[in-house]
View 1: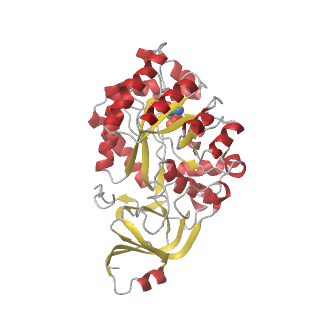
View 2: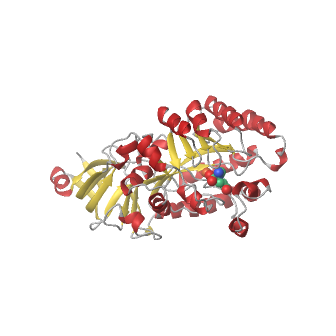
View 3: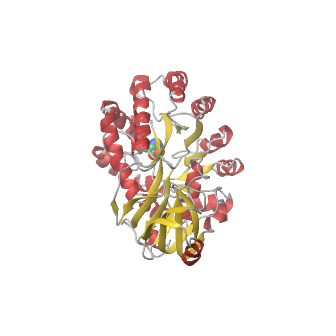
Length: 434
Ligand code: NIG
Ligand code: FE
């Protein structure tokens, strides 16, 4: 070994799921743990990980450019947030009273509010305004310990405004230390100008939007809000299959409010993930399991919508042996929070997931929901050096001591980005970590 760029010592407890593949069912509890550990990094990648003494012995005589001591703290893989609506204009606190008075989410949308209110603000916003707002959210996520985030379009709903959102996401990926993975979600709602002509809007997505998004290489995934009163199973199937023909991997907002068969559709079209799933049937869950679809659960959303119903995480894990992932669903309506740590707490409280399962769901399973299990989501030699340092003695402490941010530091691509709870560089620093 010629040289080490960064050696991290004093890791009281290093916890990570093993390997690159999704961890299904009871595998989700199996966490690799090393006490008094060290990690060595070169060219943005992990080159050694193990008990500190062994790592030091191995590196005897090797030049080490920088050593940092994390003084007994806990280190996990950088967290991955695989479902957000990051780029959008405006906020929706004006709907809070309506929501609290019991008006259902889909009724607010049907009255032209909800998603459509954010569509108005997003259309009115310049790229620079969208960039500035999303960048602030990215910094919040980073401070929470997140190192990779997915970002969906879907608040433009015209060709130009969808492209605008996706271009902002691309620019953020190039200029912010966090990695941003883009999803085209032109089928997020039917815009007012297509009211009563829903199939014409689907035609517009298929003929105008999808080819342009693909041509400009602005997204990796295609998502649809498949729900009663939004996009039907047939419309969703058409969009996802056309997306696939254009090289975009399907994802789907499925069975969130009604059991429409979105989970079955996800399996049929070969989706990489299916999200929400509160109302998914047993047949739907069995289909996900058979076709290796990652269920992405969003307990912040059910919490914020005041629902008493929750996704059936225990059945998904224990009965269907699924690789559950967790995400914030950060958006201005159903879940206005960037806090993945709040989601971890809610996964414990309402989904009855264990701390080990929660870590797996926020790391390797989330990475696989984005097709990136080979590169991120676990602490393995050869993988990208994305690490989160927590001011916490063990995993259970994270959902236990709730409502505060436990992140002390974040290493992204081998660079120290957050230290002592402060962002220390806003440089993207991605050159070496392709
Ligand atoms: O995942 N369900 C649809 N889309 C988002 C909400 C978007 C919004 O309310 O602005 C979700 O919850
Ligand atoms: Fe969503």
